[in-house]
Length: 597
Image 1: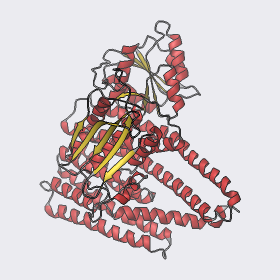
Image 2: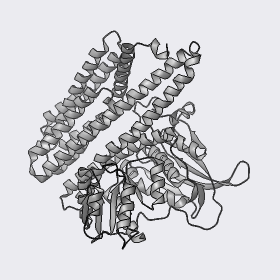
Image 3: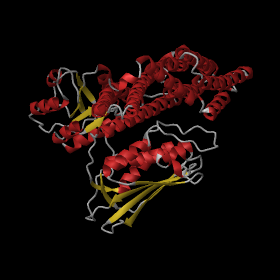
Image 4: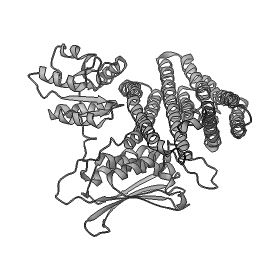
């Protein structure tokens, strides 16, 4: 009998349920000050327009229900004498309570003006989105809490009426649906990870007695991990499709005249989509790196240009938190590395530094040349220094593990918001590039992360990281053919491209695309088309048919993370965009393809 025979199925399921409850209880114990501060902000927003007893009653209910729930869940997680099914049901009841208390703030919208309605909607939607990380391991509890936040908020916008009210209500409910799908994916990944961990523990326990079975069990674990990676890669397409449609439609909304409060709501939705995209990208990065499908492609990189682009992308986030950004890099300095991997490593380090720096703090990025230890060549040293609470020396290795979020001893504060994967991704990418990552930090002294990169031989050539993102472009008057089999995404393309001033032709199949009358200036094609047709086949047929323009500009959009797809796109000279792509990224890629044809 194998290692699994030592653990009965009911016992394993009970242990999984115990772990679900433990995760929810641990999350319930944190976020005390964040909830308090948010509740204070809500009370301040509505204080002028809502009777004070109502506001104070709501505030007291939110704080009291949060504390009661945290204490009750802690007791239930420790009390294994009670049946786990009963304790999970009680967890749902507690989530109904706090969901009702928090979500009742939506009723205040009846007395507020649209601008304050939009601010209150942003807070309630953020509360609901946070339940993905705090309650998704007990799915009924997640739905109980999040539903009592999203549904009343959408209902109040429906009651307000008008195109704005109906539109915002639809966006709120659509975002609820996306959050629910993401919570289910998180739960599925949690269950798979738990199963793999339990299996490995059983293997370690029975190692002396089942040595002959160890190789087989190890192979099974490897296959399970590969299956998980393939699952995440395949699921990314389904997850990115609605995000793709929402990103393009939000982009189209920017071109529609609207009141400032409505435009603020569009920006909130756009920011939420960006957070979802970042979380999904982090999960997929871990999956690809662990599966060994990412291959480094070193080349000459202008470090100052890359650094400028990364820092610019974090300007808004740093400003929102009141954190200063400063960079010090010699101009023209070049390194030899993979620019995409380095960019993502630096972005994760910057994101981590900004999150942990207090308001009024400073994040500094410095680049210096230094002699390598063996004195054979020069190195380029890149450091990212924050002004946060610092990391104890005994935790320096721990922070590079997945899902680890530390709390400064005695602070009483919960860890900074995030998914806990950023530094784990940095570690994996650094190992892939052969670049050492060093951490210098102590409690109260901030943290300094250091990368050492090989310096490129000075030949004066420009690296690949120059400009491009800010170059003016326009598609006004251009004819663009969209080949996409998903009607929801196809409609989003029509909205976004139409808002850019394009004349748009659309097709669901290759035959429809070939039958279009006229000569498009460019084509947008999905990598996966129905009927067994790939986007690469479609691109080849379209170019072959357009005898007057055999170099027809074609931009391919895909959610596929397989390196073979990247290589195939390179061979056919197809710009490749990764879903979800927003309207500006799509427009910039089309304009560049047209200009280069």
